[in-house]
Amino acid sequence: MNQNLFTALRAASPNDLAAVAIDPADVGKTALHYSWRDLDRATAMLANLLQSLDLPAGARVAVQVEKSVEAAMLYLATLRAGFVFLPLNTAYQSGEIEYFIGNAEPAVVVCSPSNFGWVSKIAFKAGTQNVFTLGDDRTGSLLDRASHCSDQHTPVRCQADDLAAILYTSGTTGRSKGAMLTHHNLLSNAQVLKDYWGWQPNDVLIHALPIFHVHGLFVALHGALLNGSKTIWLSKFDPKLVIQKMSEATVFMGVPTLYVRMLAEPALTRETANHMRLFLAGSAPLLLETFNSWQERTGHTILERYGMSETTMLTSNPYSPKDGERRGGTVGYPLPGVQLRVQDDAGNNVTVGEIGGIQVKGPNIFKGYWRMPEKTTEEFTADGYFKTGDVGKIDKRGYVTIVGRSKDLIISGGYNVYPAEIESTINDMPGVAESAVIGVPHPDFGEVGVAVLILKPHATITPENVIADLKAKLANFKIPKRCFVLQELPRNTMGKVQKNVLREQYKGLFT
Image 1: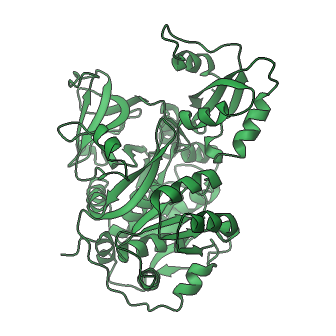
Image 2 (image 1 turned 180 degrees about the vertical axis):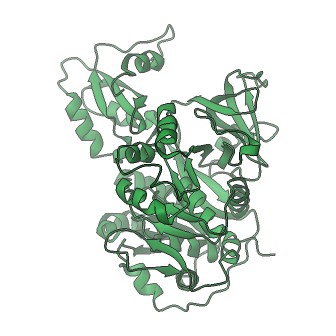
Image 3 (image 1 turned 45 degrees about the vertical axis):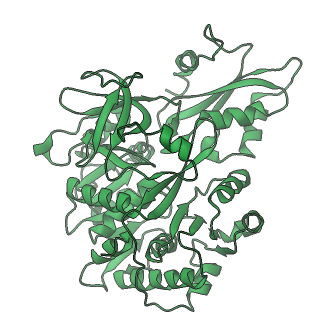
């Protein structure tokens, strides 16, 4: 039996292949529709192109392009051809791309046409043989080449444990780690979510998320495809347009920031949300204020869930009332098939309501970190549980609450920001003696970074200089919203910077 994830997604297509599968809703694209037959033919042509390149088994296809239906097709075609998809955030700059390409050694790199000059230089220098371009307006060398390929293709046979994707997730040292996800990891999680979230035959998804991370690429896209559901596709989130499209849809998935922005729109009412069945939130903590405001304005209760790059989805608030209520401030129960426990630093299970490190086991848990066997071993317990690095608790009713992150991770607008990476960049700046980056509450982004630093004697660097320098080196979502210069940083008796003191000091900056 072919365990290729693509075959399962393809098999779920409706009988009417002429029906609309993806409907781009952005202005200027409203006349363009993609049928299920279009998806099958286009992914076949792209898969045939990839196979014509004589790539080695397990070859990586690294992709950094703007969101488009064609970009989603490229992901599906990579699965179909039996290769490994490596999505990269469109905000990454040259230093970051150089590391990813050097570490993953992709056989194919696909980038935006406007970035071809510098991306191709990095790729060719690293030994990549094939560099293509793909624009968000159906242009680029990838589609030009694929247009000459056959629209018939037999999906490559894969084993359940074969790699389907590698997602890079940074570590506290600033060095990114490639989480290896298999065909079985992704399919098993998609099948569980299809049942748990009550996907129905007439469901229509509004897809307003990026497709370079788990939420948009796997949870949303797999959900619609595995249910044979039409997708209303937005290349970028537009709160007015999402609200307008609710009358045609039933399911919306978003990070908390998107809900905050829709709540700022007067058009959001019970009437405009009346046709919707389900609103899901994840990728960042959902403030209780947002949860309650949404319920009051729309009559809908947001379903919050929890997952990560290494595991896809782990827990979810109940969909069906018979399974319990959706409780704000929690991420619900462990999903079917997921074992979740909370342990103290000594490796003992904590009692109900006590806080500890969250550990998980299940068919959705990743295979390990790309070319980091020691790190992989370190992150798993002797009995096979993955140590998430998140800190939380389980109440007497079984609801899981995330109370913090043991590695100082900041989740800003749904994106992971690792302070150590930013601190390293700041500390390299002339005149900086030491820095600390902390996350503080923000009404729109959930959390944002704040940089605090001390200077070397006689240095004249300003907070504005620091921010400007960072913007030239790092992706925009990593840039701290504020920067402060202090005489000294608070420290404990061992000399370690007390970030908890800094977080307390600056927690009211934006709220």
